[in-house]
Image (cartoon, rainbow, N blue to C red; front, side):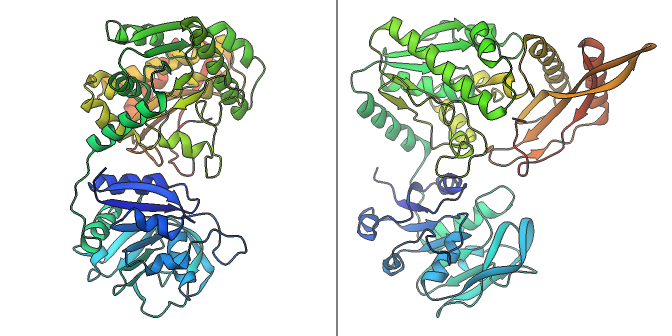
Length: 507
């Protein structure tokens, strides 16, 4: 790629790929590298800017992630975020110390619009804070350019050396003008030209697929969802005629979904194979209640089915997946484990394939949708509501049984039908069958049925989300239908928790 480049140096934070994505949103190419990358190798990339990510450690602790001090002598503009800012200050002789009052969540920040990274902005901003340490004394040349009620150095700058830092996270949606702040750093400080677009990513991924796969064939785990569908289209363009799409109906799909997926891909220029595997998946899940164990069992069983189908096709040694970045980060790859996604942390160690092909691994959901449109996929697929690979198993709390899945399928179908009928917009909405049973009354009889939880959220990156406020009339109608039409359910509740602190799915 001949594009201008920004390097994101990773110090273990969960938002590193989100930072890289925000840079790409600003039409600037980005790449993530380890925080301790040798300075000469970094300089060879000729970046126009460097961003230091957050991280869970304290910079003054022995063994905490460090960078080469010569990094700050390259003459390249640098933006440190959270831990990245503290590392910069600590390395250059300033002080980082525990907070007297820690700050978490959306916080009022007063910024200096005279600074190039806050140019054109109001003094009063909101930033997502998440820190127990903060910058105290500043190194020579630095000045404070933002503060909060408890953090005097919420953002700092050394304009002469083009070194900037923010204690809050500009990359997340909970910092409303954060993308503008990153844009200002790129264009006002780094001198960006804006010469990157998603087409550059497509070109690079096609080249990488061809280099990795060579003349081999590839088996793709196709769920019919946005990610695996876009992955299929990209693979078909990169290695036409050598992609075998395997749709595993594991009995954990939504109502009528298996048939809908098969119909959606009928007649397309792909080798589509449907495997009906409900019995084997439910047998493996019998008696299992732990969410992580469920995910790992499902991930392993998926791979076993793919291996069996690949053997029928001949010597197919590559497995492709529609893994995207939120899957990776929640599974604890270079960060803390939140939940093991079946296609990342749930994969067995003794996988028989030569290698994994995951061209979407660095993208977020909205970027995947843009790429899908570029590849010519219909809007019915590109805008399809996300559905987890483990399916209803992670929406059925406790042991997964056929009886409970059938209850959940019906309740979920009712909720989705009512949401569609009222044209209530949400990026993801679904029902959960909890393991809570409560007393109810129907007619003159006592009942002791399950509780269904409804969830609807809005998000673009699926790293954070906000709850969709739904009219009581819609909720009442949905609850009435579920209790009346789904035998075994006696209560319906609505989940109003955002992410964080919750995740979008319940398990």
